[in-house]
Length: 322
Ligand SMILES: NC(=O)c1ccc[n+]([C@@H]2O[C@H](COP(=O)([O-])OP(=O)(O)OC[C@H]3O[C@@H](n4cnc5c(N)ncnc54)[C@H](O)[C@@H]3O)[C@@H](O)[C@H]2O)c1
Image 1 (tube, protein in one colour):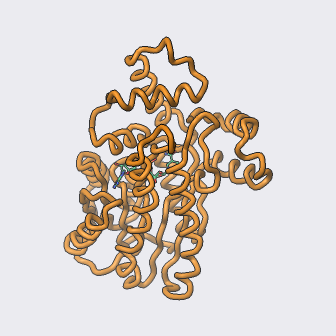
Image 2 (cartoon, protein in one colour):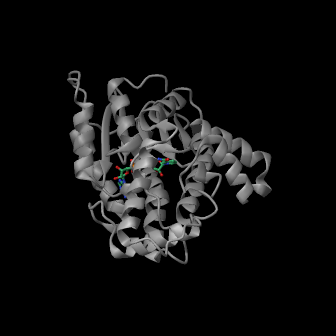
């Protein structure tokens, strides 16, 4: 798809981060946008940002609260967008919503594990199921599924368990790669791409907490303090001398530095993704860190989960994300 003007794009997780920047850049190119998120406040902010410049006559930006892990929410989102965008087709589907967390079979609860997996994998799968009939009706269409570098490397460093997110992101990558042929055989006017970002400066750390705890508060609850202690201990920090308040501070500093000190901004990431779609690339790596990690894992897969591999890579790209 060379041109987004006049098309209709669906974006999941449009409230913040890369979803928000995708919405802004698509609207700037004259594309209609229908987005969903679990946060009504974040959606309203994105919508406001899209409408800062007066929208050209007829261009629509619509937003619905919907949880991508729940099929009925996605169906309601679809039915409302059919009405609000006055359409029976869409051209672009960005399955972007995601959270981290649920890392361990030992120290995370089963609920946390499955919440992460059901959003990151289930949300993509259900998104495709829900919107496929509307993509089929378009003259040309493109599905963009957001995986991660954790879709080909299942770690964020040796001291942190990362099983639910990695399992989900590998699933997104495998599904999208296999979908290419299914589309070629059955709906050749639809293309698909898998997006694999490295470290992008977004609020995913604090949003993950909010979605996992079901609370809008920025403060950790007692269970989260226990889990944050375990995580820090796993990373080699002496936690015995740290008060709960110290743990709160470390957690909010981590969320802030993750957002503010990333090598790639959310806006840069969105541009790379949209350029990749225009160039019809099926694999879209986002950021120099993602490109380098892809090379390194291929060069030496047997060493990919060693301390030495991680330390050398993290030093080279300046990663401090664990
Ligand atoms: N930031 C990174 O470094 C990074 C790296 C690789 C992959 N990713 C992936 O990129 C995608 C976008 O993440 P981001 O970094 O922009 O984070 P973000 O937290 O800024 O944006 C994600 C949005 O999804 C929403 N969301 C969460 N759960 C949802 C649900 N169940 N239903 C609907 N909306 C939901 C959040 O409220 C948020 O607005 C995610 O799939 C993430 O896993 C991010």
